[in-house]
Every structure is written in structure tokens, then in C-alpha cells.
Image (cartoon, helix red, strand yellow):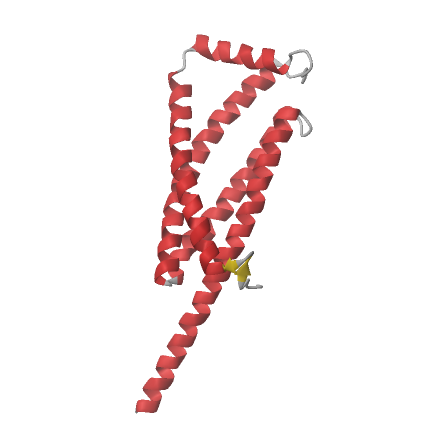
Length: 193
């Protein structure tokens, strides 16, 4: 596979540190947001759920907007949003761990610590694609709500691919350095004998 030497205007090592820092910071915030959303949905009374449903229904069918959304579609959308919060909570925790390993591995120049990142980011990509499909099936691909969410999720997919390529490239660089160090040590050992 092709190994990138530079990412935009910096080396992939620097890009990995930047992406790891942003991912760590963003995931910490996302864990807090997801936990609040889950707690709010679990503790919400049936009456509050119905009120929330009617508010969204009225908003989506206002004069000028008139998205043609039914109450069942909104109910399904709210249920999907709740399940997405649960999946996102677990993914955010996994990203916190992977980003921490990424930063540590880059700083210590140890390729083994980059492996969790190369596993978690494709998992995040997979979950985003699944939710694009679910939103498209529930509301229709060209529905304004679905379209906005799908654009955001697809941008995340592009970023996931780009981050994974940077991490993979740096992992390859570290692996190559490790192999050349091992080869140099064995040649030095043979020459001293």
C-alpha cells in the first residue's frame, strides 16, 4: 500500500499527533453529550416524549418548511437518534482509548500502539455508513433532515479515511525503521564476532 510522507503541510507523525489530540478532545466532549442524551431519554416521561414529538412534527410541517414528515417518521427518527447516542457513546470511549494510544505510540515511536487506532477508525466509519443507510431508509435519502444528517455523516467518513491513511502511513514508517534497526543490530553483532 502507498505510504504518505506528508499530510498537507506537515509530516504524518505531526498529523497523527494533531489528529490524536483533536480526537481525544472531541471524544471527551462527545461522551458527555451522549451520556446526557441517553440519561435525558431514559428519564423522560411519556407525556414529555409526546410533547417532543408534537413540537418536532409542528416544526417540520410549518408553512414554508412543509417537509411532509409524518408522526411515525419523527417517532422513528427520535428512536434512531437514541440508539445512535448509545452507539456513539461506546465509539467515543473507544476513540478516547485509541487516540491516547496513538499519541503515546507516536511520541515513543512504537508502532504497536498505533494498531488500536487502525481498528477503531474503520469501526467508526462502518457505524457512520450504517446510520446513513438507516436515516435514508427511514425518511428517504432526499428528505431535508435525512440529507443534512447524511452529509454530516459522510464528511465524517471522509475524515475517518484520511485519518486512517495518515496513521497507517506512520505505522508503516515505524515498522520500516524497526526492521532496519533489527537488521543493523544483527549485522553489528555478526561483525563484532
